[in-house]
Image 1 (tube, one colour):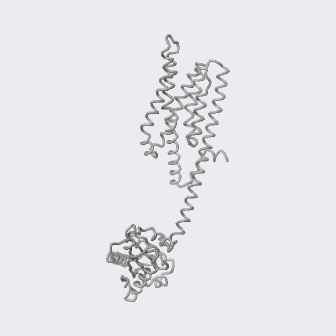
Image 2 (cartoon, helix red, strand yellow):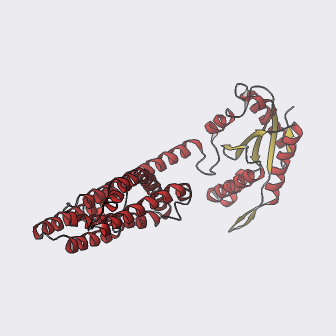
Image 3 (cartoon, rainbow, N blue to C red):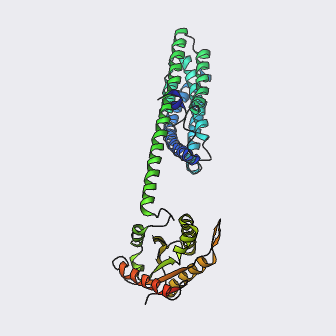
Length: 379
């Protein structure tokens, strides 16, 4: 992988995709920060009691200011931990609005730990604290470049300053500066790589999901109108509550003289007319109704009703809306009408579907025989 690819994300991706990946990243970081603060909530009081307060209580100790500094720094870390734990629900709920919080808080924590590391130099300690925590930060938190650089750089500056001020041994100072700089640069590169790996992995998962969703949509929907196809109509019909199957309306609709539209205006306009009236049908029926393109200019509609009269009223609403809303083409308004046949499914709608469909089909045939642009019910 090239350095440019390692340190950057693909800005050509749709904004919605980048936003989703950032949201997922932020949720992971919030969860991991919470684990970290739970540990600090327990560990920091132990350090304060066993080391800081113990050092402060030593009589005539020349290093009171040092232990007092330790105490203030560890207490600050503990108070930050309490604040995070108390507010974590709010932070999780407002993840998008608080995206800046993780980098800022991480930078503050690392600066506090770098101060502790600097004070450790007075006692001859090595740079274990600094190295341990920048490694943990780089591996645990998902941060892209240059965000990770901005987060780590302040603590690195404090780390170097602490060595220059508090470390008296020239050899130890040089050794610590060399090791700390190497680890600092290594963590920037490692964290950039880990973020890029997570970014690519998440993007791949989203792309696979999008492809699967598209394939599922293609297999269940009519390619022209976007309505359910025959197979999916029957599948959706099978999901209706069996206790309510005794009151399901079946409406079969056919656009009148649609061949005339194709002959006069062409098939491309004819397709647009079908799309237009498919939308009218979808908006005319209740949201829980199943609407499908059955074939050609035929549409099949099903849904729960309280009575046959309600089903006939719904069919009449659809018929009136189609007749009242001509398609506005470039060649002028194209007015069409529709005929509808209605049957009421009162038995097992799946097992006896062919029977009820034939009833609706016969009623549709009757509507056409009686002059079209009308609604008829099954005899």
